[in-house]
Amino acid sequence: MVFAGKTVIITGGAQGIGKAIVSAYAKEGATVVIADVNEQKGKETAEEYGVMFIKTDVKNHKDVIKLIETVKHTTGRIDIVINNAGVSRFKSLYELTVEEWDDILQTNLRSVFLFAKESAKYMRENERGGSIINIASTRAFMSEKDSEAYAASKGGIVALTHALAISLGEDKIRVNCISPGWIETNNYELLTERDHLQHPAKRVGKPDDIARACLFLTHPDNDFITGENIIIDGGMTKKMIYEE
Image 1 (cartoon, rainbow, N blue to C red):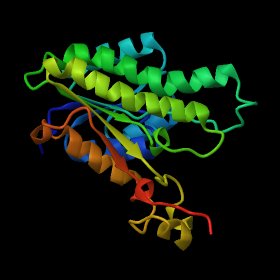
Image 2: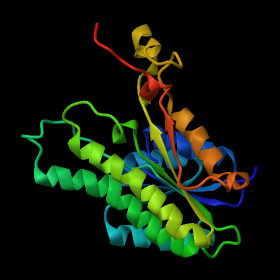
Image 3: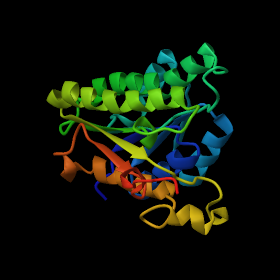
């Protein structure tokens, strides 16, 4: 259990993909901290897996500083940060307000910058540094209509990832990115055969697919991987689609 004794902070860990990541690291013996604005779901997930929950508005700098300092004081170290928190609003460009645009960019992208900036101050104290994983999306590279704010935020995460990897490399901090495709977080059993078969992998993704990738990228033996973006989408971004 290579993650035993390690402290892992997971933003947006109360539900969905974040919850699966919480479960994965908890099972590996890590000290896990959920940072989420949803207090009810956060407490429920923390109780379910025996981990810590700290209510946090991930786009608020003071909240992030308070969480990072609390975790450092409580556990004595910070080893891994998974920047998973995110929101989306898919609506016409003509109807999307500037306030909605700002909220999406601040929640999805600003939060990654804040957590990297504040956690790295303590990660660099560790003998083997630390690891940061940013959760982006295949929507950073391809789009459906009415997705401008979300696409911009996820594209920014991919770019920010390789910039952070270069800046933090001298402190032995690795920074990588995961771009999920269709990951069904609610009613997997309600998916149709058509849903599954449109993927080259012949199934829709599950949150555990992303959680396992996080474990792989943050494993200390994989310290030659940094600045990378891994697309996990069942092959959909490699599939040429023509209208018949």
